[in-house]
Amino acid sequence: MGKPTNLSVTSTTTSSPTGRCSGDFCVADRKVFPSLLPSGQITTESFSFTDYGVWYLAGYSSDDGIRMLWRLECNQWLPVAEKALSNIEASGNDMFVFGISEGDVVVFDPESYNAYRTIALADPSKEYTGVTFDQDSNILYVTEKATGRIARFI
Image (tube, rainbow, N blue to C red; front, side, top):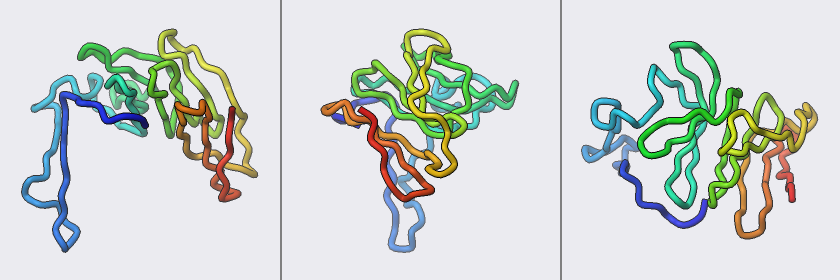
């Protein structure tokens, strides 16, 4: 994901030998951080952030059930796309957001609403499930659950 970024919301978890969270476990919620999530009761399916501390969140609001990709900008959640996404990865330079949408591998232009391209169509013989992007080499790696392999897209 690149270099660590200082964010306004930090949380650390330490665990005891029993595997349970210790007393210093921090929970961030709407009462403590009112702008932490988009408005409504949000179900988060995936999130990612850039080297510049820009956050992206894929999920849906129980208010309307519409699946969305949001971007946190200046303490305001802005819609990037109306799309069901099970996994996302933002490029470190904030140029792209990669994701898995109903089995397709897709890439979004976060500056333009609903602007995306399909990199690879859903393929049951591969079953794409996860994405990660190597900024240094500009290679997108995608998990193929059905084959147990990792696909590379250049």
